[in-house]
Amino acid sequence: MNAQVILGQLLVGLINGSFYAMMSLGLAIVFGLLGIANIAQGAFYMMGAFFSWMLLRWLGAGYFPALILVPLIVGAIGMVIERLLLRRIYRLDHMYGLLLTFGILTFIQGLFVWLFATAGRPYPVPAELRGGFDLGFMFMPTYRAWVVAASLTFCLATWLVIEKTPLGRTLRAATENPSLTRAFGVNVPALMTFGFGVGVALAGAAGLLAAPIYSVSPLMGGDLVIVVFAVVVIGGMGSILGSIVTSLTLGVLEGLARVVYPQGANMVIFVIMIAVLLVRPAGLFGRQP
Amino acid sequence: MNRGRLSQAVLARAGWAALIAALMVAPWLFYPLFLVKVLCYAMFACAFNLLLGTCGLMSFGHAAFFGAAAYIAGHAAKVWGLPFEAALLCAVAGASLLGAVFGYISIRRQGIYFAMITLALAQLTYFLALQLPFTHAEDGLTGIPRGKVLGLLSLDNNVVLYYTTAVIFLAAFGLVHVILNSTFGQVVRAVRDNETRAVSLGFEVNRFKLLAFTLSAAIAGLAGANKAIAFKLATLVDVHWSTSGNVVLMTLLGGLGTLFGPVAGAVIFVTLENYLADSGLPVQLVIGAIFIGCILLFRRGVVGEIEHLLKR
Image (cartoon, rainbow over all chains, first blue to last red):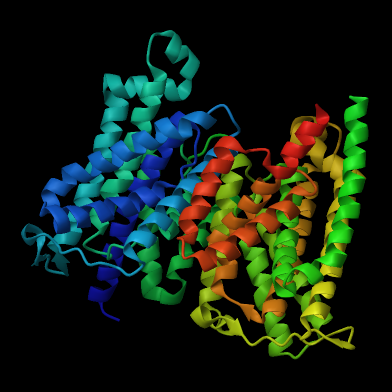
């Protein structure tokens, strides 16, 4: 086995890790604000990939316009879903949120399977990001480097907005204590709609970034979101930077496993989850059990 | 209050009588194999509901036990050539063991995290089923022999198969009923309602939760094993997360936490699935829509609604 193969798999791991990071960051925002473990995140990821494909195929809008349009479209759909459906169950046990979003995931997946069948559709790498460059020790395909850079930018931008801006302060306040925030005259329900939009837009953006690497298919999100759930159990949803670091690390470990024991690679994160639960039941960055 | 309790007891007794009568008559009215499927899923939903109703723990990974037991029963009957009863026993033992391990890991967290952990553990089981040699990956285990019940009557006769399944179902259903009404059931419910108080009363809470989890896994396994042998088939669908979701939907349709709810839910679900398979409508789409509708408009479920009406 040569170093090229190992580094290649680690890079794939890093890319998957950045998808996990965007997905789990979106999950954490939504869980913090709405108290919903949004399993439909997988459907929004899939829609992100599909809308990119539709924009290209039907409207001729390429990758870079899609980079702006897709998160907006997916976020808008998310906000409509929040207004129409999620809003009705906030007063109930958190369990109903998981059940409702599970229904939404099944519905959206079913819709896309019905419309497009399950076969994967290729999405071309944009011309500007084709090719690669030689790092001396390995050949780096430009698009893969771009994906890691772009998703980290998305994550860090979200982190900066949440931690450093007035909007982020309000969001954090509403997460911490919604009724008190409301008493200060903040429109918390609107904020929740917005927060859900941002959370699922991150998934949509991840879907767009993933489209040229994995083919676009209706079932691409369902399995991913389960892995991301395991990532969230490992890292906890309390700390944004913590969840980004956990996601990237787990992605790389998964890549490493693909080198050492390819058959077991898709189980690695679950096994790590078990180990973490046995040693630290609250998760690596979790506060309460 | 008194009237409510009385009518509930009457309802329960009427429910039992209706259930047994329906089980006796059913094969003359419906296709026996369809009924076998209903009973297997009803057992599965009862197992899920046992954990939810007693511990308040909603598992999103019960397909792991259902599917693992299906594979074990299939392998035992086909490759080892074990008789029907022994194959079921092996499968239940396997599912209980898996349940004990998964329970030990997942009861460390509660609520939403518990659901996420069970979902992840079930996905691990799914990937194992994809890799292990004896499951035959995408092809699944096919041509599982049904064998004979008690070494006498051939289960290849669908009516014999139906009545055998009905007896197994009644045993499992009765067991759930007994567990719910036992001291153990009361302790676990006390844990669900106020864990801190149960701890202060000296109960080893996690041990009770683990036992409830293992029992639930064992019954889910019995359902999966019975299904595998009846349909001569164990596939990846049995361990897939959509199966975990389906059992949640069945229980929800019938009524979360009610005794007869899971049975009613399984009847509705299997009927619906059969109808959808013939209609050419997109199954997942419709199931998703029903899921959403149930959560928003019909949270009590069929049996839950009836109980609610009678209580008023």
